[in-house]
Length: 327
Ligand code: NDP
Image (cartoon, rainbow, N blue to C red; front, top):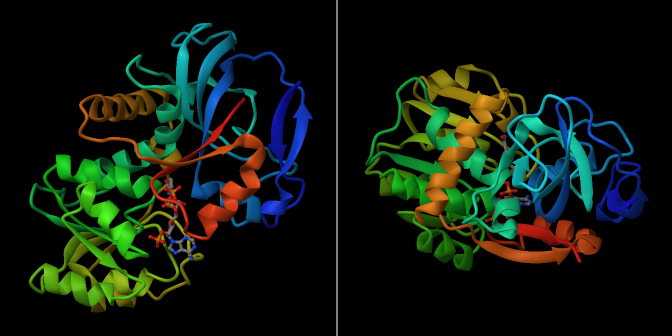
């Protein structure tokens, strides 16, 4: 038996209950991993509230790091005793779990468990956003991009990675302190969108031209303003709903705003194969090992205090990554 957090119905943080659950042996293509740390992500909130569909009861959580305890038939890239980390299907809020091996990667010795647990889902997201989301025009050094919630988990990684790629990242955040944090992590400009009209500021910063890409995980509240920040043929990369889902829209608006593109991608499409997952993870491990991206763990909560962790995340009180710790 392992200690785990489970929800039996969708709702607020109070639905996150401590339970004891059996953990079995891995089947074909599976491993059992004993967690040393667990990553907290905003997507966990969507599964808790029911915005994203799932069967109940559910052990939430899609990120963790630990030690491989057992390996099922057919798994060749992991062995018992390996240090490992993953972004994967929900089920990580627990001491140990059986899960598909395909999304689990060996963790390089230079990366500790806390960092591994904090960075996989968020770092792989930053990876595909910056490197795989713009096939049409591509990004070049010097290009302006706009990244909302730049002081958050994905945000602070994206700020640093964008700087390493030579991009001029304009970050938005909900307070002056968060703006300062985004700037300290490589954002070229930061806008406090709680106080300022971010679309007007983006026009000012870019000399009226607009940005090539907007990375928007805030959703409902920023959608319209984001479209106004794009230059002609620019790309709206919507990837989250922290303020609520984007309302349905008429495609004509894209023509009116300058022949824009819109995409809504998810990490797990990019991680469809073991090879693509490993390639993305290797890229992430390399940029972290080089020191160009440092994983900022802003908060730690015990697994059993996960209700507090969810409250802090939803109240916009966290910065960078948050991890859940185990005794
Ligand atoms: P963050 O640490 O970025 O937390 C979310 C942030 O969103 C808050 O800190 C807050 O920053 C901002 N925000 C704006 N409006 C609201 C609101 N009404 N309520 C709460 N927060 C708000 O979370 P993560 O790093 O875990 O994830 C960032 C985003 O990326 C999430 O929306 C997540 O769903 C998305 N995501 C998408 C993936 C994909 O593949 N599509 C994969 C991984 C993450 P501020 O106060 O500065 O505004």
